Amino acid sequence: MSVTTPPVFTTKIISVFFIGAFISALGTHTFIGAGLAFMREAGVTLAQVGMVVMFSRLAAFLMNFILGDLLDRYHPRHTILGAEIINVLITIGLIWVWPSVLPNFNLFLLLVFCRSALIAVVGPSQQKLIKLFFKDDMPGQARAAVLLNLMNVGSLVITLLVCWYAIKYGSFTHLLVFDGLTFIFNGVVVFCLPHGLFPKTAKMTFNVFSKFGHYKKLESGLVVKDVLLHLTVFGTNILMIRLAGSEVANIPLFLLSFGISVWISTFLIKRFTVARVATISWLLLPLPFAVLYFYHQHFAITFSAVLVRNIIYWNLYNHHSVQVQTLSPPEHTASIAAARSAIIMLIMGCGEALMGQLSQHITLDAELVVRFSSCLLFSSYYYAKK
Image 1: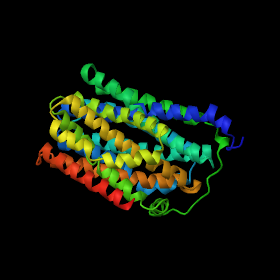
Image 2 (image 1 turned 60 degrees about the vertical axis):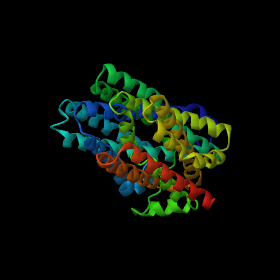
Image 3 (image 1 turned 90 degrees about the horizontal axis):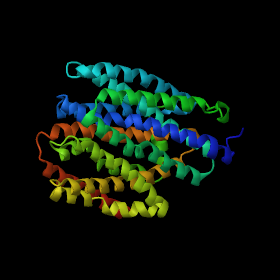
Image 4 (image 1 turned 30 degrees about the vertical axis):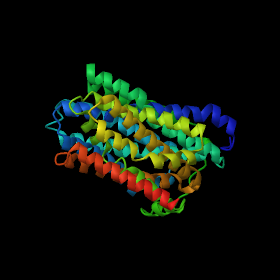
């Protein structure tokens, strides 16, 4: 069967692929969604929480930076399946370590590192599959890129509701079991994808830095805009913890807004053009932090401001994702996605660690002023270059 037969892909293969991505993401997000709150309740310090998030980001960065080029050399079906199988074993290790997380914090950190490294393999491989599914259908690739973001992050709406219930009435161990089952589910889905539908991937010379060159060539200024966008969400998990204060059950609710926002962003992109939505989003970028500065003591207003900030983020992230997906040549799709992910993970990982440390020395009000000023500067840069 040819990979250029749209009806077969649309009805029989792509749907199953996205279901698997959605279920796997459900489990993946339980760790952050509930883990931050459970770690704090277990006595893990805010600085240690920052280290956990930083190691998660660092693992993803190293995997994409060092091995990202190799993802284009192997079948994406194999890389996803292998990652899911190993992560089931890692989840078992996390279940074993969790009851004594404080004395075994270093082991816990190592398992988190390995888990995140393997999850980082899945994203670029999924984008490779989309490129193979749609081939020369650029509108189809654009829609699939936005849909993949929706499946991977929109699942937060369900996941974090489960996490909120678990924090109130259950345990982190139960959620880790659920996490492991979702890895198994996606592994089975990917295993069942017909292997013969995909062409053999050509062998290429391994070069750690070549993928960044390919990424830079896609469109002028795209890398800079992506970097500026992610500097606006620098240390975002630590910020959510600070906004929640003593009400730790509010942490999953703030993270829930991240999932809700990707659904809203997807609707806006379908209703209007993605470029138009992105242009307006750059203009509104500083607004949520101004609102948070004045009203962060009020939960309803704080939640609304965080939601708006997340919608803005996803509008811009989806715009960049469409550009990366459609402009990437098939032979470099996974490695370019890995290059982008490596840059993002480096920014986000350093942000969590740095803000975890700085939170002990600067007030929340001071942090919000810095965030507002940065967003205003980045927004001005965008319009100056436009």
